[in-house]
Amino acid sequence: MGSLAAEKPEHGKPLSGILIKRGFNYHLIGPDDLQNYTELSTSVLTQKQTVAFHGAFSLLLQCLENLAGEVEQLTLQGGKLALKVFKAITIIQEKRSVTVEWVANPVNDMYADAVLAVILQVESNPTAAQVARSKKSDLSKFPEKLVTLLRGTYGNEAVTRTTKGDQISVRLDGQTAVINLDTLEVDCLDESLHSHVSSAVKRLHNAMAPCHP
Image (cartoon, rainbow, N blue to C red; front, side, top):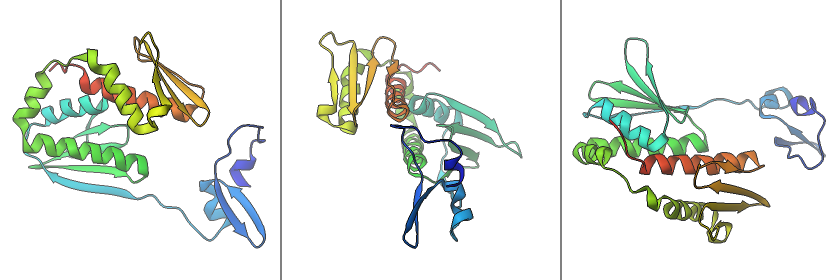
């Protein structure tokens, strides 16, 4: 029904939507069609949290780059400086504080928790953050730590490293993602698994790589 019926379903291709029941019939519809076929409506919840912060905003920027890799720098109305990480979490500089804003969903909530942890760490011990920023990391331990991270996420049996040590494989629900440790590229036919594994590889590498002021 609705937008899901715009394209003809293909055999073996996943179909995602919301299952609703009308009488003795069941219908699968897209989230955007919910208010058209039911009495329910959808809404967007934006969360906002203000945290005390007295450190340098530039130091927070570099620590967030270690966490997320790419950080977008913004200037809002009124001249306020802001940072955007993971393309979803906005950190706004206030007087003696920062405000973190994001659209609530399970993924963004996880990202926001990580960002808030970085802010609190920098606020509680800015000297240690500066030392960590300038300290060179030993990337030779990256493959070992990546295997540990992936096994903690997908399970021990799902993650294997080749005998040569140049690739790591992740198997999930019949799909396989292969990580090239030389280029950090991920080869996987499943878009969701590819996205999650690539994100994990990128975040860990950025966290371990030396940070250049």
